[in-house]
Length: 453
Image 1: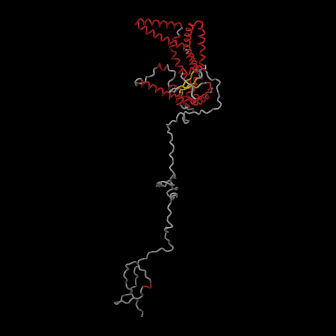
Image 2 (image 1 turned 90 degrees about the vertical axis):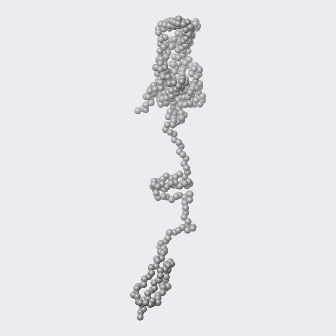
């Protein structure tokens, strides 16, 4: 007889961890339990907890670093890893704090390894280099120009020089009368005195006489070696452009704080120390080219020659004024009768002189105005000469500085007289001025200042 299969008893759930039992440890039979017979129910295995899944040989765990395999950290000299945020990772400096990582994928320039020196300051647009700097806009190159063509005609007598001589003719005749009256006192030597005076005009072109004139009357001096080293290259440039032999002239210097220059006699060119030390060489060349224009046009020697032959008449006129003034003060002591008598005497002498000389002395009253007009014309011609040599912009700058100096002198003069308003220039003073005003001279330079088309 086969025995019914035994029903295994129900075991309580384990309270500890999961028990791992082998098949040999499970009893194969249990004693029967008394009681009614129960239907056969297939045995059910109790639900055991699933054991932890241990990795197999196929799935290898990630290798964890051990003691000898510690992670290698970058040192100061090691390069950082490339970031995938851009096509070119930023380069970090070897020393100093790390730069801030950009949040945008824009490529960053490499960081320098050391602090770069600050860039040099750039000059402002309004800053003007000093006068002696080659970067000055009015600086010219005075290097040797090689062989220069020298004109066969060094000087001439232009219209203004001829007009100056013509206008000095009444002064010359008056001086001749004065010299003739003086020669009457000397008797037989009077004719020699007149001839000597007529021949004395040649001293205007005598070099020793010119030097004495420059030193004692014009207050000029010879330049120092340093001043000559500045003047001569500029003078060579001016005479080279004009085609004039520069060694035929003498350079002089006047110790003055004003901007000025002078052309005297036949061979003297003088500049002030202010123009020599404060102007760039281009503007100094414009000043010297202006004075050279007076020489080549005959303005310098004609003006000096006319002044020399008018000197006896000027001296006689000043003596006559002094005597007349003294007699007038004496006549005032005799009340109105003395003044009337003095007036009749002076009037009679003047009328006799005018009628004898056919009214020629009346021309002397208008001579100062006519000579001033010719002087202004000669200044404009000298400006044109300098501008034709290529110095028009430099000459315009010099005229601007000269105009500012004149305004400053007028302001100081007005302040010295009580701080009142500056006195206005009268029409008579403008007519007696030997130099044109600033605006007139600048107007005549416009044709040279306009760019060539």
